[in-house]
Image (cartoon, rainbow, N blue to C red; front, side, top):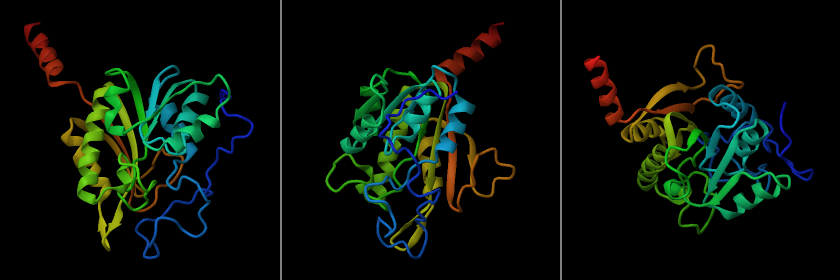
Length: 255
C-alpha cells in the first residue's frame, strides 16, 4: 500500500502523457517543443519505471538517491514505497518545487548542490540504490546561468563531468549497490553521439560494472514500458574494492 506523501495541491504526473523528447529527430532544433508544458521538466522519468526499479532493487527502509532531482519522481515514489529518499539538484527552483509538493512532516533529504559533490553531503557507503536521469548533454539546458549545471557544458567537458559524477556516486553507494540510469543518444553538431555508450565507458573507468543494459530491442524485457530507439536503461553496480577482493581470496587460500 502506498504511503501518502504528496500535498493536495500537488499535480505529480507525466506532463507529456508518456511521450519523450526525441533528441535524434530531424525536427529537433531547440530545447523546447511548441507543445511542451511551460515550466515542465522535459526529461522526467516514468513513475511506473521508477516504481518498478525501487520494488525490484531495494527494500523498505533502504536509502534511494536521485542526484539529478529534476521533477522529483524518484523522491516521490521512494517515499510512497517506504524508502528513505535523497534528492540533489543544482537548480534551487527544482528543489523547492519538489519540497512544496510534499505533505507537512514528510522529510526527504533535499539538497541544492552539484552531483559531483555528493561525498560532502552524504556519509560514505550510505546509499542502497541510485535512480536518476542525467542531462542529455547540452541538448536540453535546464538553466541559463548556473555554473554547476552540467546541461550547459560542451560535449567534452560534459563527459569529463560525468566521470566525476560516477566517482561521486561510487563513494556514497554501498558495496554491491546499484545505480539505475536512463539516458539516450543525442545529436551533436548534426551527427549522432552515442551518449549511452559514453556513459558506460565513463562509469566503467570509475570502477562500476554493468549488471544489465536495456534498450528497445531487449527481448522479454521486464520493464513496465518500452524504451524508445537509442534510449537505454543501464544498471551499474558498485563492485567490491580490490582490497576486499584480495582479502577474500587470501582467506579462501588459507582455509
